[in-house]
Image (cartoon, rainbow, N blue to C red; front, side, top):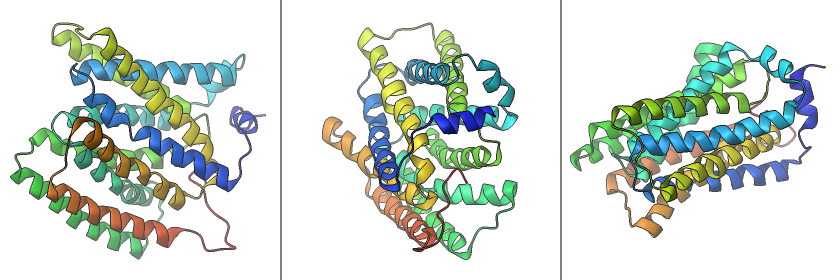
Length: 307
């Protein structure tokens, strides 16, 4: 029996409703990520290190439990695609935290809603899956929304570094395509690789700045964010999304986009500019529209993100 098949056998059997609830709950946990960063007083690089440490600890524990005395099965099935996916995951997490230093949570999160569209285009380039006319139209509408967001935010003195957030949905689109194109292995492998990227980048940057200066409270917040607000819900998401069609998964994950700006507004008083809200609403409407158009009709076999 292959290692992939063994992992599939060990995962719990879920109904569509149970899987949907797990995906929705995961998006709610993800939504607290921006608030966690806003609640610390350390720099982004130290926060990244502790976030990566928490994320890596959970990934290592899960992999150790799943494979136990079958470590060779895991190592022999790892492909370059999964390593690249892990590097992308680490890079996206780095960009997410760094851009939060220069832009609002709403600006960064709303830009990420175009990820399903970028995934469609990478699927076209890598998997030869031609994007539908609906995707092309939604892309045009989303670009209008991005222009409104970025153009208005620049007039509001947005730092150029905040514009790096545009790279996050591009990286995520490539990440999801690579995961789909590679053979099935435990999805925690890219998470472990990504955690290593965060810790390495964090240590290099921290050393260049003179060393660690985090309080115990801030370090614990970073560890909590990496483990309980990222790794644990991502593990649950990877299990739940097996039985949920990809379009429905995209809709359920919109919970993060809606809730994240709400948390920072309630708890730290951070508000989004009018251009961010208007542009984000345009993007959100386009993505929801294309997602609903792709939901399988009754009686058709649903296609999950795992194929």
